[in-house]
Length: 454
Image (cartoon, rainbow, N blue to C red; front, side):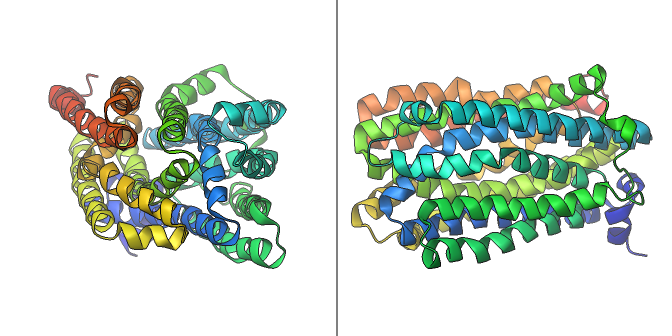
């Protein structure tokens, strides 16, 4: 029986199979899943831009901070629980992994409902605060009302899917994402172009597709033949498990929370120096650059269970080998993305809209945005590596070095001197400095990681 087949069903293989084969077999499904999900977002925005209008793209961009905030709370549980599950399986503590699964399920329901109720109660003031104008507010409101009504589904789907991958079923996790994407791509144009439901149709399609994906994931975890599955005792919330989940999940939570704040600042500065179409241009640029980043994140999702399991089993040479291979692959991915976006920004922008001004700003912004993208692969892989081995403080610091220490000051300062271009300059400037900081931290802690002293 091949190593890959073992890996898909038996997490013990994480400690014995070739690292290269493991990284390939775990990362490929995750990359397909994350890029498919990101590609759906791009296609959805193309549908909205072509079927609803240029201002609808700007309205959708206004919703990014709320989406980031919802994602932050989702990853607080999902990313934390999946890392804990990998580590517990490596430690041969299967019962603790099952309890982590059950606690994650309950936490996702509680947080998903509470966040949706809170945001719906103050939706219009929040959107106006985030940079909506009188022209873009109706689009943003119509989209987010429906998305927030399905928020608990989103939390459960992505959270449990992360655990599905981490517990030894990367292919099933990939299929669940592909299922949602496939349904969305079929249903969204039907609702937008045929039923004429506009931006609301795109939101309804998203909720429907994620509900289908959630049903698939739940079917796996309710199946007693699955390596870890739901058990009644697991749904009893335990303080020690919640603390472990939140401790590791705090890194991606803070990343997405900071992304929320940063996107608000970017939208406000773009609105100030370029108006609604500058905000829409950021929506386009963010969509395509996120696609590249999601490829790297898919790679790290494949890396994390391998690194976590082997770290838990104290197989440190295997831990460092998967890290090194992931850094090389991540750098290749971001460099390829950089070349594509620098060479073809016009063609990419025209896929979203034919609006001349929106295309012009998008092309300018895209080329400035990606100047130091090749460094992003190393920075993303390294911060996620520290998360995978349970070193939450280091992961949080590396993540926040880009988001808080560098990017926020640049967003506030550079537009004052360079106008609209200054907003775009802020991103690559932060990319460069955060990559240098990450390299310094890695050099300092490498030996300590190998000796499990940090």
